[in-house]
Structure formats: C-alpha cells, structure tokens
Amino acid sequence: MSTTEIDFAVIEDLKGKDLGFTEYRTVTQEQVDTFADAADDHQWIHTDPERAKDGPFGGPIAHGFLTLSLAIPFWTELLEVSGVATKINYGLDKVRFPAPVHVGARIRMSATISDVIVLPGGVQLEVDQVIEIEGAPKPAVVARGLYRFYA
Image (cartoon, rainbow, N blue to C red; front, side):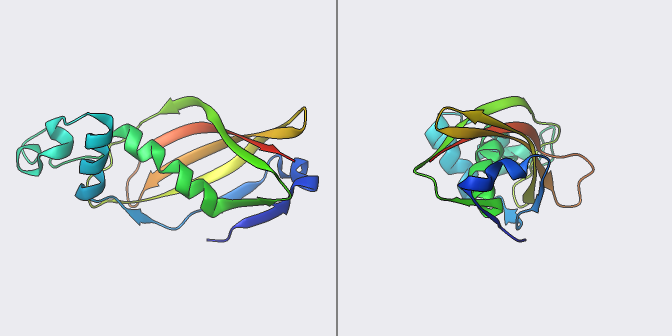
C-alpha cells in the first residue's frame, strides 16, 4: 500500500486516478458488538456467534453499515491532500452490499477518483470505492464516496 500525497493546488489532476488498495483489516466480534451497541442493532446474525453458526451465513457477520463505515479509515490510508483548511466526508452514492463479511474475515478497499468537481473555494472528489473480502468472489461494499476539500 502506498498513500497518494498531493497538494490541493493540483488536486484536479486526480481525475481518473486509481489509488490502489489499502492494507487488510480483520473484522472482529468485538467490533461487531461495539457497532451493534452504537447502532442499537443487536440482530443475532451479528451478535450471537453460537446461534449464527446455524443461521443463513454459517456464523456471525458484520453489519453492512459497519463495513461501509470502515471506508473512512481506509480512505485516509489512500489519499493525503496538503494545503487544505477543511476536509469533509460529504456523503455516498449508489451503495451496495453484494456479500456478507464474516467475523474474522480480512477486508481492504480500493479506490478510483471518477470525477473532480470544482466548487466555490474547493473541490469535490467522486470516488469509486470497493471493499473486498480476502479470497471472496464478490466484494462486501461497492459505493461512490463524495469528499470535499476546501483551501
């Protein structure tokens, strides 16, 4: 993994750039349980490993939104923009969860800058993000992240 470092003055040059992959992270039951508490979503397929063994996924799985939330730390591994006063996670477009992430699975994210939109005082990056599961045929998350940078 290599972080792309760029100055805000030339951020428009990122359009079309493939930022590569992050390092892998292992999803733990502790993360899933903590997320369940924060989101008030204690469905047994996430939080009851014994019952989940006999469930539709053969074991506990991470919440889709937990996996999606990991796009934030993954994103910071892939891009560092200097010369900015403010960085904003503006939102997401077209989010999908094609495959579940089993507790203990290793995941990583790839990102490609699909567009750079000039805004008053800044820019918005539209980023195609894929969170993949090590060894799995389908990704866990496919989304377009929207990030704003202001000078």
